Image 1: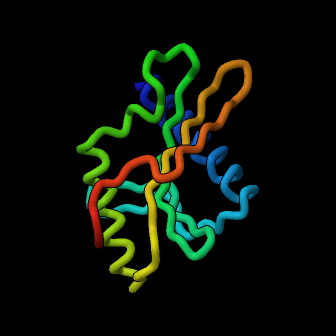
Image 2: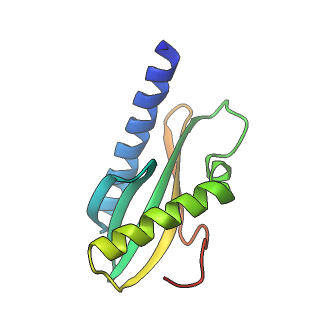
Length: 124
């Protein structure tokens, strides 16, 4: 139980680091932890008139898989459904994309931003 709570707190810290990173790059945060049913999109932001749906993956450097590899086809499909709902809910017909931000804690936190990380559908 303690380990699960630690993982949740660690994940939230990664999301905060990703949010600050995006703000420094000029992104405008539109929503955090947006929920649609059981699906959550970590960060929804806007840059250059484009909506960006961001999945944040936080890991320690000693974990085997790269954080960005943790977003499989099933997760992509779920994010797509939540993104469709967000766009419809807000009557948005703007360009959009799906990014992954990997936050890896080694001696310090390192951030890697994968723009257009996946394409779960052709059009909305």
